[in-house]
Amino acid sequence: MKIKYSGPRPFINHHGISFKDGKEDKYVYLMIALQILKAIDKDYEDLKNYSYDLSTKRLSDDEMFSTMKSYEPELEKIANDEATNYGLKLEEEIQDIDKNQTINSTEKTAWINNLKIMKEYRVQRAINKIYYMHAIEYISTVIKREHIKEIDAPFYEKYWHVLQTIEGQFSNIKTPISTNLKVEPDKNGELIAKLIIEGS
Image (cartoon, rainbow, N blue to C red; front, side, top):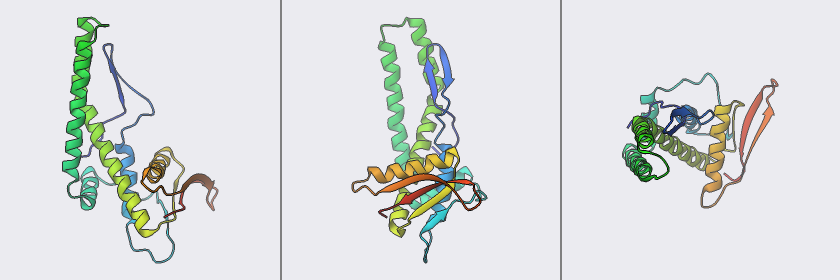
């Protein structure tokens, strides 16, 4: 499967399908992550800092996919394998509901049908998360390789989320790297998010 927008996390039961606020598809963060990746993966001379530019060109789905494949040629196969495993978990979810003794057969049928309707949607969300987490891995690799000390971005929710994910990546590696994510005003008084990488 390719990269494409799916939507917020669905909540599915025998009553119907709803969507959870604040549980956005990782697709919306993937573009920012890849823009940061493309910008930091360069030859540095002195300053090991990067400031995100809001005027940075948006990437199409195909451009995002080709950017990622340039870092990991086998990524599509890896993502498809992971998506297949996720699809199997969704099938197990259906089997569990079918065995559920606390709801009647009409409710079971409705719940299972709702899950089937949303299967492709949920698999696409999983694919987008897989690609997003791989993009974060590439960013952390470049940061370590280039000894980047700071990444600045506008203090908006999506940028903050990406910086938090990068920070989490550094805390979860075998030898954790110390980071500090903070908010402070820039020279124009606008709030910016700063990820300081102390051990890169």
